[in-house]
Image (cartoon, rainbow, N blue to C red):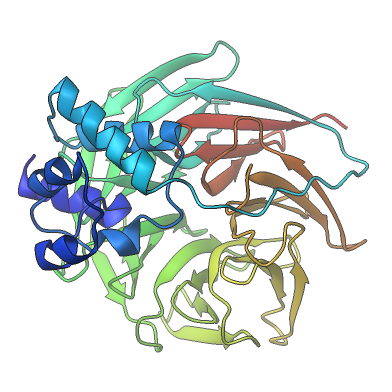
Length: 408
């Protein structure tokens, strides 16, 4: 496994510890030596394992590592798998709460072709296709939901970590290379893959991206604490720094006036960027513990955010700065994440529950309705909306793409 591959894997789902820490904290037993020997320099395992995994989850994690270049003999893989399952089982999570309501949906999931792809972001395109970023397989995938046929496109730079997705007016698919420090463009008709590297070596993690009304591409770089602007006509990239240090810009959206909004996952803030002056404005949220992760905007230019840390759905009126919040149905540990607006109704997923849920919130009645995701969902990091108004999810650990059709 190359050093670059290893560092990429560990940045997203680390499985190793710095060796002195490792020797002090890792349980003894068959498999520890394999784990120790297979990973050389990385982040602390104790900080990355989170809530642990089921046996099936660990199998998927090991396949992700295999996709990144780790080679183990069959007996080593079995020993390591047994060690991880025994010592790091999935911790208890809150139950996904299903609330009845007036809307009916049908839910269909497709397994993506490459095991361990870790589908990160979904994207519904104008032609009716469903796309996903195969983050751990270094591919962009396209599904025709009418036929069930998949096509995967390998990307130019190895281990570039495709993350966010957006479509331009010409049908090209743009993506963030989250570990390749680049913005990429894929032409589905030809398979041609263009790349735009970051101009600053400190900006290594392009995250989420969105086009404004003038066709300018905006993106966040979470850990670098930057907002980026890319002009597709020239390839020029400008980088902006939010006023709050370590604010970790995350999800993005554009309102009807062309203003770019983002949520700051490292602080209790929503930010906006004036596309003409490049001035950044921050809107503090009332609770210091708020950590908004994704964002959507309704037709009245009201900003809605998923407060992952506290288990809340939030509403910000940028005109007045007024914030309203509602506790998510499954409680404070529900971890709301991917969020979209469909005909001014808010749809999102709770990513910290078992199973993950699909949640619908009607701003007029202020009533919730929710459904459990068949197969668990685990984890819905972002969502998209089809041209006919249905909800699309990417399910990272179950390696699936899911379409939620609103039938009534």
